[in-house]
Image (cartoon, rainbow, N blue to C red):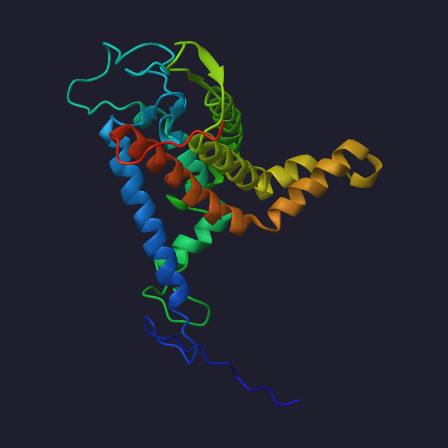
Amino acid sequence: MQVVPAIDVRSGFGQTRRRDAWWRAPLVVFLVLSTFVVYATWAAFQNAHYTFGPYLSPFYSPEIFGSSPHSWLGSRPAWWPGFVPFSPALIILPFPGLFRFTCYYYRGAYYKSFWADPPACAVGEPRTRYRGEHSFPLILQNAHRFFMWVAIVFIALLAYDVWAAMWFTDPATGQARFGIGVGTVVLAVNVVLLACYTWGCHVLRHVVGGRLDEVSKKPVCDYAYACVSGLNGRHQLFAWCSLVSVMSADLYVRLCSMGVITDLRLF
């Protein structure tokens, strides 16, 4: 049999034989993620307009230290360095942020869109060496499994915020009364989408079923594994929906607090 030698021909950055608009998806990811990062960073440093009545922005939850009635431990602590801007969001945002940043789906998304590694399948990239995630700094991506457990705790805390948002002060009596406003629905939808995204994490899928030889012989684990697997199949969808929902929830609370919009009481 005649052997034809293969020649490794590297394409320059952006070079490809593809005739489709391969650049659209990386461009959209770049724009959406950039918008989210810029907005979240701006909102975190504001230290204002993050609460309105019973509503608390998910960017600031839980409010460990702060000036609002939602604060757990009171106002700004004395040990906080004077040269560091204070905001309750700066204490808690790194944890869910790092969970999302190290997510297996988001890695592939921003590797392409921000690092062009590669920008798309069969498209030339601006480097000739591939190091993968086995060396520093990308080896730190393996911490995703630990941030997953923290993210699950945050889901419970945000769910409690939804419950707290169902009780508002009746202006007629001055007493707390059960009721639901548009803000309650916004916060609830955000929790559902975040939970679907978090519980669809493939690491959690391995935790539920990875230690069992035959999942079907464990009815409880089999059901949990099926639920997590179903969410995992839509992980990309929930990743983007939850990204938009958490930003929208903060924006809604912020606009209500600033008096730009009025929260409509449903009942």
